[in-house]
Length: 94
Image (cartoon, rainbow, N blue to C red; front, side):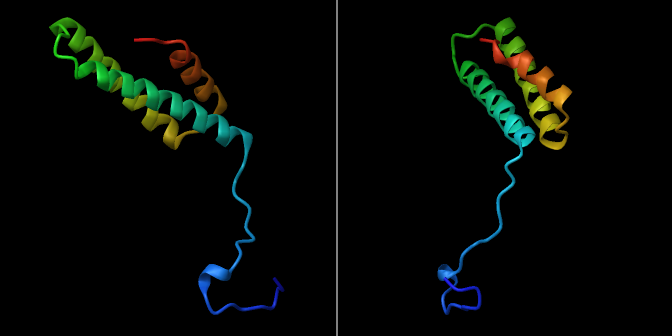
């Protein structure tokens, strides 16, 4: 397609902008996905009717903490914080 070509239909245009593909943003996305998976596991556990009162309370507290951590890394992407979150949830199983 020529540079001076103006199409009649917007679907014929090309996007010349490149997406942001910075390694630190990729790492932040991987950590966030890991936290989201952990949050989903906790939500699944809370749906279990056989969960005892103490286990439910602990699961609710862990879910609250995971949600706060997700919100924290959503707005702040420094590497030290991401490494802390990654280490905190990487090996954690419920």
